[in-house]
Image (cartoon, rainbow, N blue to C red; front, side, top):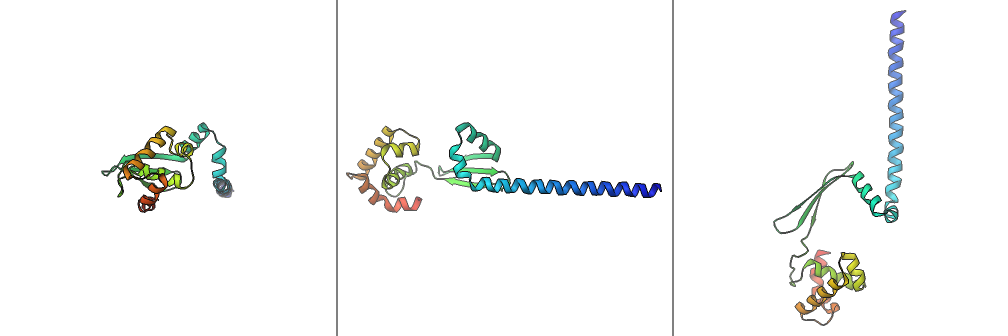
Length: 164
C-alpha cells in the first residue's frame, strides 16, 4: 500500500510539473504574440512616446551598445538587442572628404535640399542650427564654384548616390 502511495505521489508531482510547464509555455506564447503585435505597431507607438519613455524603452530592449572609432575615422557600433545576436554597424566619418572634396555632412545637406527640405527642416533633421546650415551651404557653393545648391547637387550627384 505504501509503495502505491509513493508511486501515486510521484505521478502527481510529475503531473503538476507537466501542467506548470504547459502553463509557462502558454504564458510565453501569449507574451510573444503580444510582443509581435507591439512590434508591428512600433513606429506609431514610438511617435507617441515622450523622451523619458523612449529612453526607458531603449534601456529595456538594448543590452549594450559599444562605440569605437576605426582607423579611417568611421564610427563602429556594436549593438546587442534582447533576443538577437550582436550586430555591427559602420557609420562613415561625417568629416571624410569625397571625390568632390566635400564632406559627407555637406553631401547630406545637398541631398536634403534636393528632397525639397528648407534650411530650418534640414537643421532640425541634422540637429544643428539654421545658421550652421547656411554657413555650410555657403562653403559648399564657394568650394565648388557654383551659384546654387541645385548646381552643387548636380556636380556631386555621383558621390551622393554612392553614400545613399
